[in-house]
Amino acid sequence: MLTLVALLSLIGSVAQTSAACTGTISSLADVTAAVACTTVNINSFTVPAGQALTLNLLTGTTVNMKGDIFFGNLSWAGPLFTVSGTSITFNGGGHKFDGGGPFYWDGLGGNGGVVKPAPMMKQISGTYSNVKVVNSPARTYSVSNPGPLLMTDLTIDNSFGDLPNAHSNGLAAGHNTDGFDASTTDLTIQNSVIKNQDDCLAINRGSNIVFKGNTCSGGHGISVGSIDSSVTVNGIVISGNTIINNDQALRIKTKAAATGSTVTNITYSGNTATGIRQFGVIIDQSYPDTLGTPGTGVKLSGVNFVAPVSTISVNSGADRVAVNCGVGSCSGTWNWSNLKVTGGVAGPINNFNGISGFSQ
Ligand SMILES: *[C@@H]1O[C@H](CO)[C@@H](O)[C@H](O)[C@H]1NC(C)=O
Ligand SMILES: *[C@@H]1O[C@H](CO)[C@@H](O)[C@H](O)[C@H]1NC(C)=O
Ligand SMILES: *[C@@H]1O[C@H](CO)[C@@H](O)[C@H](O)[C@H]1NC(C)=O
Image (cartoon, rainbow, N blue to C red; front, top):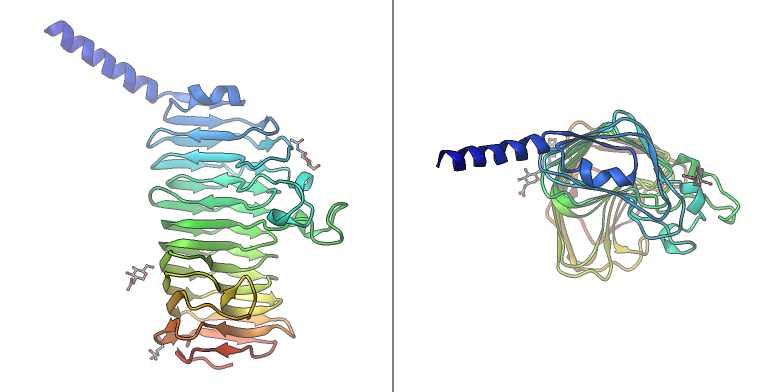
């Protein structure tokens, strides 16, 4: 009896000791052993072309990046980096993941040309901080966390893709380089800098998503959508962001063909946008057309601008605000008394007269 108890406690302590170890990853060959530990350090190395770095972590693991990660160049579907697990603490330490974007970029993104690994990065729950991503081949982060996730102090820099290259026919070489695509609940993304050529954030579905204190530069602004059929979006807070030189600052886009979806409770506050090229605020139910024939299958309500005021400055020729609802699909009273848009021209407001406290 005593022997059995002693044996069980020995087994218990061995199991505990082995999980409490520190694993070190300096090549893909180290991953399997390292993820058996609840502390994982990642040194700088290059992931061979066509392969992914995939970390399936034990609950509660802490990951520390100690150097930069590069991915070899090969046309394949990716993703390049996946981290899964719950209650993970991921400390980037300011180190970067380099996706080798210029190798893939042809101005076409996901719409053609070479196959590009996308998304580049797939996420966990817990805290993910201080990570830099440069030169993502196409979409950067795809977030569908299994539990609450805080993403903080991140950098996404695809600004090199603003320039044309030998394969892009004079277009910006980077395309569809979304910062964050979120289909999730309980997500906060904050204090991050995103330089890209597509949506800074695109929320496709989910609830309780907060996007605050971020800087979005060069892309297509902060988006809810594009919303497809049979999805719900409820409880989105977009606050205190700075949006510089984007096509639009704030956008809700729902697909004309979508059915059975609901988008509600979207709150904007304290955002600042300058150099906006097409629309200050655009709410459009005709996606993929812009201000085309809207669909009625996505019920949209509760879109409010609360204090402090959101200030948007659009370029000459751009629309300050455009709203293109399907007949009867936008409802309620939307309080826009904390929205101020200057420059450009007034845009159309179609099929909805529930906006209060704002005129253009
Ligand atoms: C991938 O290609 C890009 C562009 O040519 C280059 O900058 C990068 O260093 C390459 N990556 C690797 C790991 O060789
Ligand atoms: C609106 O969203 C917030 C979270 O952003 C949530 O706390 C609140 O309950 C939601 N309101 C409704 C009526 O669903
Ligand atoms: C809109 O919000 C402002 C500021 O909070 C408030 O003063 C005003 O009464 C609200 N308007 C409506 C129609 O609820």
